[in-house]
Image (cartoon, rainbow, N blue to C red; front, side, top):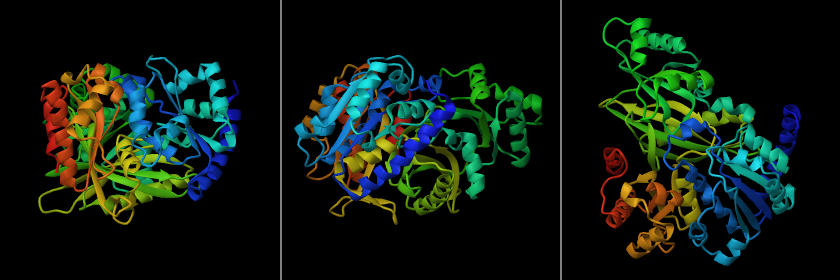
Length: 516
C-alpha cells in the first residue's frame, strides 16, 4: 500500500484529468467514456444503522443510468448486494428513445455479495480480484471517472488504485461539510446562521456553549446539539432550557434530558460520538412559520459553481429534524433569496478547491406580518436526500432548470413540479416483491408516462419486501397535480396492503401529505 503523501500526489494528478473529461462531456453529446458508480454510504456506520433499510440506499444513484442516453457511454454500477434485474430494467426502459437492449449492453451491474455493515468502498478495496476486474472493465482509464455518494479517504484510495479521477470533493476538504465547518463558511461569507458555537468536543464545552446562548438570547427556550457528521437529522439532540436561574449545574442536569429522533440513542453514546467527531450547539429558531428549504449546488472540475435546484424539505420524527421528503421547487416568497445566499457559499467553496455536488440546508422563519428571514443551517459535501428526486425529473423529462427563476421546464416548455419521499413505509408493504410493485402501478396507471411527462418513479425498491419501505418521486404539471399523484400512489399501495399507517409515527406522514 502506498503512503498517504504519495496517495495524495497521485490523487491530485488524476483529478487534473477530470477537467478534460468534463469539458468533453459538455461539448460532445456522444463523447465515449465510462462512468464507474460506487454508491458507498461512507458515513458514520453507527448513525447509519438508525436508518431503516439503509443498505438499499445504494440504489438511490440508479438515476445516473441517464448517462446511457449517450450511445457511446458505458456505466459500471457496483453494490453490496445484487440489485433485482427487474429493478434495473425498470430504469432502463424509461430511457426515452434508447432501445432497452442497447442500453443493457453498455451497463455492467456488479455486486460484492457482502451485506456487512461497512462502507461499500471498503468492501471493494479488500477484494483484489474484483479490483482487477474493474480495471479491465474500465478500459481506457483516460476516459473513465468514479462517482460516489460521498467522498472520504476510502473513495480517494479507490480512485488512486483504479487509476481514475474521482468526481467529488478531496477528503482533505471535508471539514467544510461538517456542522462546525459549515458555521465557519457562513461566518466567512456573511451568510446569516443561528447563533451558536462549533468545534466542541466535551460535555463541559456543550454546557458552556448553552450557558453562553442563554445569556446572549434571554428567554431562549430551546437549542440543538449536533454531531459534526450526523445526517438526515440523525445526530441532532433537542435541548430545552430549564426554568429559573441558570448555571453550569442546572444546564448539565437538563442536558441529560436531550431528545433525539432515534429511539435507540442514549446520552452516554451520544457524548462518546460527540467526543470522537466533535459538534456544535446552536439556538433553535422559533417563529409563527418555520420551513426547511434546501439548495443543491455543483462545482465543476473547472471551478465554476452552479445552481442545481432548490426544495422545501419535509422534516419529521419526534424532534422534527428527521428528513422525510421534499417538494420542488422551493417557495416563491424566498426562493431567489436562497439562491443568492447559496451562490455566495458556492463561490467560497470553489475558492478552497471543492468540486462536485453538495447541498445547503436553510431555515426560513417569519412572524405574523413580517418578511421571511433566511438562516443557513449546514453544508452537505455529498449527494443529499433531495438529489435523487431532482435527477429523476431530469432522467425522465430531459428538461432543465431555468436558473433565473429556479423553475424546471421540459423541452416543450411545460413547467414541472414534484412531491418526493425516501421514507414511504408501512408494515403492510412487507412481502411485496419488485414485480408486485410494478404490477400494481401498471394496473392503476400511476407509473410515469412519457406521453405526458407525469407520474411516479420509484427508487430503493429493494427495501420494499423486507422493510416495507421505498422512495418515490411524483411528477406533475402543477403543484396540485404532483400532490394528487402522490396521494393516489400511496392509496394504491395501501389498497394492496389494506393499511393506512405509514411507519411508527403516522402523523409525520400525514403532515407531509398536508403540506402545500
